[in-house]
Length: 48
Image (cartoon, rainbow, N blue to C red; front, side, top):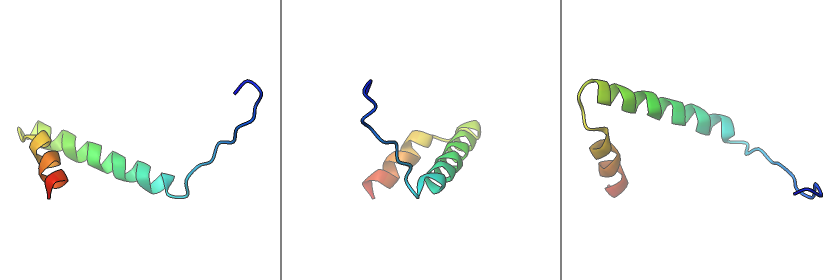
C-alpha cells in the first residue's frame, strides 16, 4: 500500500445499497421502538 499500487473503485450500485441499508436500519429501529422483536424479523427472512 505504501507504494501506491492500488486502485479504489466504487460500485455503480453503492448509492442504492446505502439507501437500502438506511431504510432497513430505520425500519428495525421502529420495530424495536414499538416493542417488536426485530431479530426474529431478520431471521425469518433469512430462513425463507
